[in-house]
Each structure stands twice: as C-alpha cells, then as structure tokens.
Image (cartoon, rainbow, N blue to C red; front, side):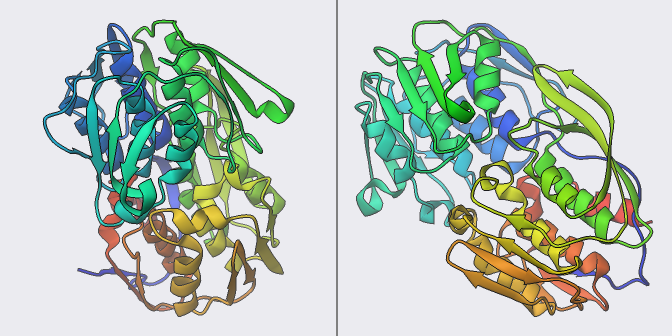
Length: 435
C-alpha cells in the first residue's frame, strides 16, 4: 500500500533522534562472535532484516544466538574457528548482500563440508564473482548460475592456502570475505585494494584476537597470519552513519530545521558523507566526540542553511557509496551543478541506484543526467510531489521521503516497507520529528 507523504501543510524537523545500530558492524559482530571461543555480548545490534538473515544462517550451522529485539543485549555462543556445522538445508541470505558475500569467505575454508547460499529475487541478481573470483585464488570451490556469478551458490569447503590478492574494486565486503577465509588458510594472506574501503572488519577482528596488520600506501594492504584463536568480546554497536545521513540531509534542506542525531559511528572510512556535506556548506556540528570499543562516535547537530553543489569522484566513493541516493536529493537544493563519477558500484546494489534515483527524482521534477558511472544534478530546481516507488530498495525509500519533506504538494510512495531492511523505525521517527 502506498504511503502518503507531504499531505500536511509544510512542517519543519525538530528534535533528537537515535538511528539504529550500524548495519556493517552488526553483521560482523554476529559473524566474528560465532567463530570465536566463549560468549560475545552485543549492545545496540541493529534488529533489521539484513542482520537477522546473518543470524539465521549462523543458527542453521549450530551457533546459539539469543533473540534479536530492539534495545536488548544479544549474546552469541561461539563455536570456534572450525566449529560451524554443515547445515541440513539451504542457507537463506534474504536481501542481504553483506550476508552472502561474507558467508562465502567464512565457509569456503570449512574443509569437507558443503553449503548452498540463496536469497530473495533481488539478491539472486546481484554479482558474487567479485568475491568468488578472488577466493578461487586461495583454492575455494564455489559454483553457481552464470559461471558462479549468481546465487544460488554451492560451496564445497576446502583447505585454503594463503595468497596475495589484488582486488579490482575497493569493497569492504570483498576484503572482509577474503580476511575471513584467511583466518584458517595455510600461510599468510595479503589483500591489496586500489583505495581503502571501510575498515570495520580489521578493527573488530583485532579486538577479537586475530593476527592482522594494516599498511601500504593509503592503508590499502591488509595481511592476516592464521593460527590465532578468536575470543568472545563485548561489542557496542554505534548508530549507523548511513542511516544518520537521511536526517543530516533532511535537516540541511528543510527550512527551520534543527536536528541532533545521537551516538553516530564516525569511523573515518565511513565519513565521506560528512566531507561532502562540508563541501556543500551544510551547518553540521560535532558534539560529544568519544571512542567506544575501538570506533569513534559522536552526536551530530544539523540546521538548515544555503548549500553549494558538490563534486564526488572515485576516490571518495568507497567512503560514502550508500549515501549517494540521499546526497542526490541534497543536490537538488544546492546552488550549481553537482557531479558524481566513479560510482558504477551503485549499479549492483539492491537496485541500480543511479538509474532508480534518476527515474524517481525525475518524476518529482529533478533535472538529473545519468551516465555509466555517475550522474549530474542541476541544483535550484524545486521538487514537486509525485507518485514514486522505492523499487524495493531501502535507501531509495528513505531518500524519497527526504525529497517529499521539501517538495511542494503530496507524494505517494509505493513500497515504503523497504526501509525496514536497515531502519525499521524510520517512518515513526519521521512523524515524531515533524510533529
């Protein structure tokens, strides 16, 4: 059923909001806790569909994980590095690319065991050879549709060997899969990226006791020495900056807005959205900066003000790939022409986000030109209400809600429930902040 947005007289956004726990960190806390020895206790884990998919897969392989509910401590009883059982059925990754790609790395080295990974219709169309190809260099045996590129994917566990692997794209999912595989390989493994991608896996695995070093120019090389046991940890998951981005943009473009987003993870490999908003002249203030469990955290206050166009190139994409859809909305309200390039990665997300945002914002009057690896957005073009569709993509759903907040006239958003993939309480928070 479509959701009616912007039907009330224009309202500003005021107040304080806590976004859900970081999705990337939530996945990794569950995965690393599962292969550690002892109990891992996770505070602030994101109780959304994607991490629930990871938990369900781990439970199917014999890992005991407590109920995952908002505000509740989650405990994971680890089975050790080689304790995962062969499941009785296919492992369903739902809509979660992170679950599937990290599982490929986790399971490829389970010698003598067989696994099959599948997912929903969207996930079965997403490319997996970007992980399977590099894993094959370590001796992994993974097969699937389209030459092993598309799920369902069958994994025949092998004793993997260490290798030096250059990844063609900077992707935290690819890097993390290789690092997970390296934990039980014979010999060291070094993963070399073209530029550094988000580094949650490296930070957290070191805390769990893995022998892992980061170096090279621009911190692009990660080396894992196998043999160390992982030990269960207490993990505190900060708020997800990718979810905070919707409020930061909404506050920056909504007249009279004054929002504070509390407890946001500020890992430098993830804060590209703050760099772009600073480039635009957005009024964002960092409050109460601190460090929690190895991750920098703070509160972000945003108020409305004039914005300038931005330029985003390939060097910045790995640090804000998930925030491009909502930044496209911000660009509509900036002075000048904003440009995104080097973003072909967006075409293989839950949807082709470049095409979808051009199509859906275009329906609201935006002047967007899409090209192979990016887009240009003409600023200063007031959006109008329209009939739009999330196309089942959570980040598209929430970006269109931000656009509807400042558009003239009502907007009908089809498939708004997609937001629950990463932010189950988004619509309630929006209503509260408008009140």
